[in-house]
Structures are given as structure tokens and as C-alpha cells.
Length: 268
Image (cartoon, rainbow, N blue to C red; front, side, top):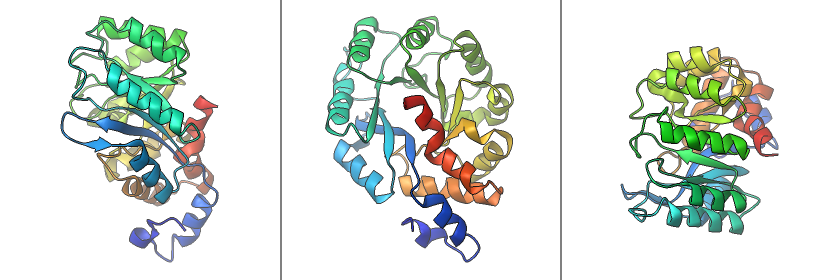
């Protein structure tokens, strides 16, 4: 049994839990390593322990909005990710981070050569609109190099749907993970992006009623589990997602796909 059963187990759902987590491939698509300006931090070893405790097999890792990059373009923070993924290649899928306002091509090309699989961009922290011209150049470079884009669409991004639709159309071969599923504009994001083949919805930090809406209205193949650790607990994120999926009558195989099988296909 999964260890969070102690919080949510009932006689009605014990069988479903057992089927969902039996040899499940759980993939957390939203985790951080390093130190943030707000003092949150997480080491590779701390994340590995949390993953082991929660039976998570793999995780996408990327830098925080760190203290050490006043002049460089996340060079030191990206190095932390490189070293973590080298120590735990079976556990981590490395993403690097950039600030579109700064010169980014040298850092981008270095990380591509080193085998990074994607990039995390944060429009609120780096203060740029999703359709910012310099960000469009990064999206294009990602598409050309077969990198996945994870873009923050949570707090601070109140009307993301139109901009996300625009880049999804303009870069139709670019895999885009919508961080936090654009929950401040969730209804519009679902309506405009739910049918886009290059879009994944990341469940990290979604409230229960938002999870209900996402699970009811979006094809399960386009939803992927994310925790946002250390800003949220992996077990609680799993518990909320699985309980919500059971309550909206998602079949066991669909829930297992959301927990890891869906996103794994992008990194095979």
C-alpha cells in the first residue's frame, strides 16, 4: 500500500488504491533543486528521499529562482541540476532555466550539448509576457532542438489562455507542459488548449475543485502529475489527485496513466 493511505483510505476505495499503485510508474513532472530567493531549498538527496518515500520513480528537475544569478543567466543554478542528474540519472530528467531578458544563446547551447531534456521558463519571476518576442526566440530554439518547454502558468499569470494558445499554434512541434494548468484562468485554458496535441496539463498545486474540472473536461492522456516540491508535499499532491480522480469515476488505468505513463512517453 502507498503510505498516504493512512490519510484517505476507506473500505470503498481500498481496492482502487491497490490497483492504481501496484507496480505503478509515478513520474513527478514539476520539482525544484537548489535555493530560491524566498529561502525555500531542496537538495538532490532530499528529493530522492521524498521520491522513495512516495514511490515516485522519476522526476523532472529544474532550478529555483535563485540568489546566485544576478549577472549570469542561471549558470550556477543550471550547474546544480547538471550535477544532480549525473548523480541520479535513473531518477532525474534535467531541465535548465533562462531569463529571456538576458543573453541566453550560449547558456542554451551549452545545456543542449550536455543532454538537458527541457527548459523551465517563469514569466512572473523573470517579468515577461508569455508572447514576449525574446521568449518566442527561445521557444523556437527549443522546438528545433527537441526540448520540452515547461512554462509557469500559476500565481501571477491571471489570463494565460490566449497567449498559450498562440505559442501552441506557432510552435506546433514543441511539447509544452502548462505549469499548474493555468489555474487562475483554468476554464479558458481548458477550452482553448484541451484539444492541442502538443499540450500537457501539470496538476501541481491545483485545488480540489480545479482538479475536478480538469479531470472531467480534459482527455486523461493530456494530464500529468506534478507536485511542486518543496512548495508542496509529494504525498499530499498524490493523495489529492488520486482521490479526485476516483471521485470523478476515472478508471484505474487512466489514473495510472496520469500518474506517470503519459509524460513518460515524451522522454523515452
